[in-house]
Length: 404
Ligand code: PLP
Image (cartoon, rainbow, N blue to C red; front, side, top):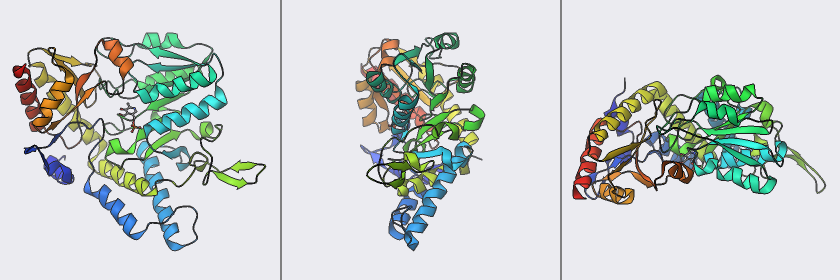
């Protein structure tokens, strides 16, 4: 069973106060707090195992390498990839998408080719394609959405052409909370012979992800959004695709042999991991994944679903409330505006009550444009949030509204 007070006790930061008020942390979409087991793993490894990986014959280096590669296996198991060759460590979702845009673009795209993205993408799944467009003259097609924040599947179908080379869409919107029907979208893309990259930054912390069941060709996520450390992320890629792609960066680790005339590249996944990896973070990420696995992704999803439904229901009662994003399939994000109160004012005043929410465009300016707004207030929930915290949020929003 899901014992919330036991869960909260694993996160020391939740005990702190801000402005004399108990911290209510509702900015989990931006980053999550860390359980003790994750931070302890980092301290422990620095104090007792630290050595560079993959290179040393000595004891510490071998032990560090074992931990690092065990971390890769934990990630493989967590998303159910077929082999650890399919797990590339990056700095985060942003780097994973940039890596793929660069390598896939180099190998498979030329002027006039097309990539399909959606209206609700984070900038990190827009700008890399624009950089590729500037370099190679590719075109970007955009799946539209309805006013509830759901992608239009008929329109999606119509975007495919003979020049479509890749679909790159978010699994869960960081603004609307919409859970996109990615399995169905992948199936449709495959029917056109087109591979798919899924941006899983906002999905992996909240719902169980099985890359084989989805049949995703590529899947990206960030460690820090799933209770792990900053600076580490994952790009999953089917082995048959990764094998075909050229390297991303050159340097140590990614080579087999080097002469001044010619270099041969290392096998998967090391071909894509130039330089010393953040091997401390990979171990800590594995501890974070162990943590959420221990609680059970299905229990976490159920807990957060209940919180989200409760928050929407309570917030709706406030006069002037406009909820942004009312998709049928929705994850742990609630965006809103009240009357004509600027999101920044709402966020600043909630902060004085100890409530941490995010305000602004949430790195999704084209989505804001589609919605005809400048920004929203966003409360995003994590596995440690409670109904009482939502009550405090609602009371806070009411109090701020009454001030205006
Ligand atoms: N994609 C989505 C949907 C996100 O919400 C975010 C971060 O907010 C990112 C990508 C980028 O993640 P990171 O900054 O960890 O690379």
